[in-house]
Length: 293
Image 1 (cartoon, helix red, strand yellow):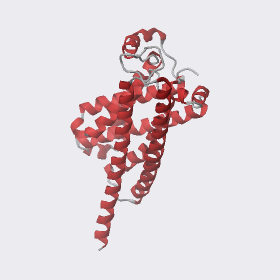
Image 2 (tube, helix red, strand yellow):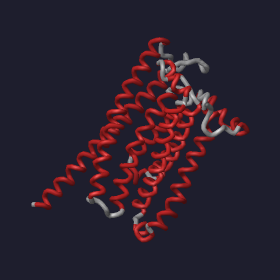
Image 3 (tube, rainbow, N blue to C red):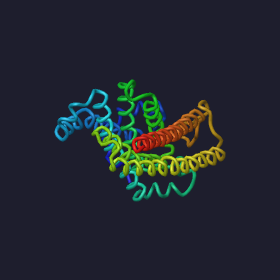
Image 4 (cartoon, helix red, strand yellow):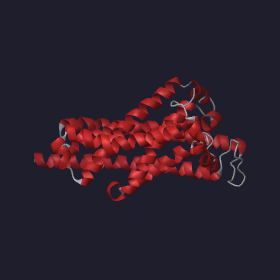
């Protein structure tokens, strides 16, 4: 199977210099999907969300402060992205025969490549490129952890076009399964429905899905990913940047450093965010108890 969106052959020379410079041999096959995804999410953020929100929530949306409107628009994009990319990743994991063959051994999971998995990787790269740009433009509003998350995700998904860890692109993008519940929680707060039974039910779902997807599932596959890296690197010896052969299957030290650091940062952020959720629930429980007294 090739990429899900057929590449535009006439445009491939545009991406080739960047791909050659960064040794991203699969990038020309998917660069158009990165551009499509980034443009799609920009249109949702800049035009569709404000227009639809103004139609459906006319009075409430116009009462939002600048930051509230920004948060709302970002959450709408995040909602669309998380649903689309999760569905697509699951579909590819179920139907991509090449990816299934790559899953059978460590070399395949580290260096194997399939077009549909590359497309999932490209759509995720496009989203995180958009997310990175918007986070830089609104850093004082979104905060440094969000910027670090966007930068780390964009970096690892882009560098995966060497190709490397193509198999794991679908695995780790399923972190997004918890995002719809987070967005619903925030939507309810912004619509004045904080503390309602609906937010309580969604909050329970958010805690459960976040815990099992981002912590249990995420740390489990991070461990197996590290095992694959260790086994493959022991079999071929990890190369320094100076020794790297552009066309060979190698794991240069700088590349390993970036991927391992990014994976560690993302797992740490998930743990921190989960802790913040628990503390928020505890504060609300205390306030509810005080009101009853």
